[in-house]
Image (cartoon, rainbow, N blue to C red; front, side, top):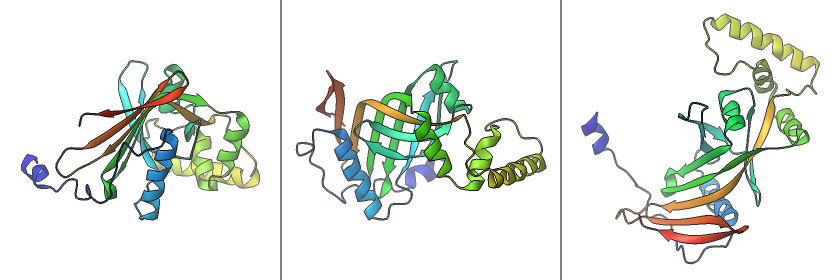
Length: 215
């Protein structure tokens, strides 16, 4: 595979948009929303998908792709079951990292911080906004358990789906919205010359300090 991989084009959209790190807002949230909206407006596929990286109890790293639910001046939000592996990881070690990559602009954002569970009311609103099918599956509480019988999954899911339809206000007690409170946010703009532009916001004394980084 080595030759095949080396022959693939990379950073094909690196010079599509300008990025001047000296002309950026003081808030990383403002710049992030600007980049996200640029990706959305350009029709970037699933621009709100991010990689969420956690640390297991044995200190091994783990990651998966999740949907960004919201972003504001407090942080970045996503929702999962607290009984899932990622939920258990966060309970033991709330240190977390998020990664966004928008291929259409050769842009990456890396966020490091701590995941904080939101109040029950926010969890309830998010859970009830999901489809009946998604709520039924989440309510089973079996995510990442070994599956030996596909029919068992179908039967339990269909049974739970009927229950959800009969109790439309049911909310799983384990469904949790987390807010990632960032202590570091790095914006990376790829360049075809490989002289990539990197700007990092670091939390210091309650505010963010900006610093440029070597590529």
